[in-house]
Length: 454
Image (cartoon, rainbow, N blue to C red):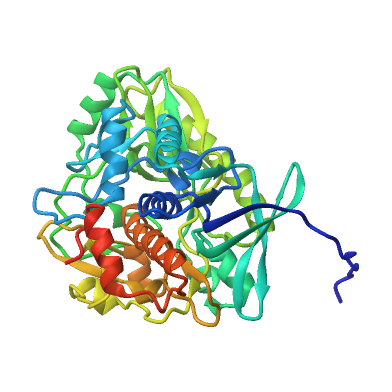
């Protein structure tokens, strides 16, 4: 039996009141806050770390639209704005496998700051969500913890963009997780410096890899639709095979392999997605083990690249991501749960809040959008059951495994985030709950903000 203590009751100061409160500032939360503020609502954005951007800035996932090809019909709206603004501010480089730009994870911290300040969003960094403030089944705000202690923030409506459905789960909404063995792996992202770009690119061209190579001679099982197999991928496995033979990598560690993002003229090799581990991102003990073991494996990967990847001989570690890259934890049971048939069959919905191309990456499936196919994201997939005053944005919206492998991608998180933010702003203005707001009004404002709905 677990030993327990009784926490004394306490009085907590309400330090802030707002119309729309967004918890979490990843692509979904950042888009939600910007959309809400631009729709005229007093909007507050709470983030537990010291920068906005979530997986972009805190993990170092720079390939925001690496799936985009000439025939891709992509999302429009704030997600595209992230990429365009980063390009304009010198915070992006051409991405090697697509017609997109990879975001500079460090520089995007400043880009995100500018977007937040320009929109008039109230920024609240360094505050961790710990509990919802409930009146029956309605959320009225949240309790946060910071260096200032416990604080209360109250709001008319709340957007859960925590990435793990933390607010929805603790407020009593039904959520679910797949068993850990079935979850998508977590990653430790890292970058290197001191790379000879010319030698590195020459070696890549001499041994070009494709998406079909992801599933060869490794411990991954990846299936495609076939049309992806011959497309170039910035994938590296051979240096790690050689490192195994040389004894640099232990025999029991065959999962190190993966992709690189960009290599700059200055010799920075970024967005190295080489380390993959099975863990539950809602378990702090798992996260602790993952951080420590992941950094160990990343240093082994660096050593392998230095020894067996041309151009990396004099290179060294530049940085780790601030935290682990988590792909898969809780999802809500929504008013409408997306299915594999929806994301693979060009699902169409009357309550569409945006579109996303037929890009699926996860649970052993990879489909690249090269043919112009896309699906619509339904508003009802953002509505959790059992809790009023709350909407969910990002990778935790309702759906099955394969739909999650689509909507978890950062551009699609921005689609759901922008929809959630607009709905929150309208609902706060007219005093209606999320399931009472007219979808026509939401769609009209989204179109005004540059979103493609159909």
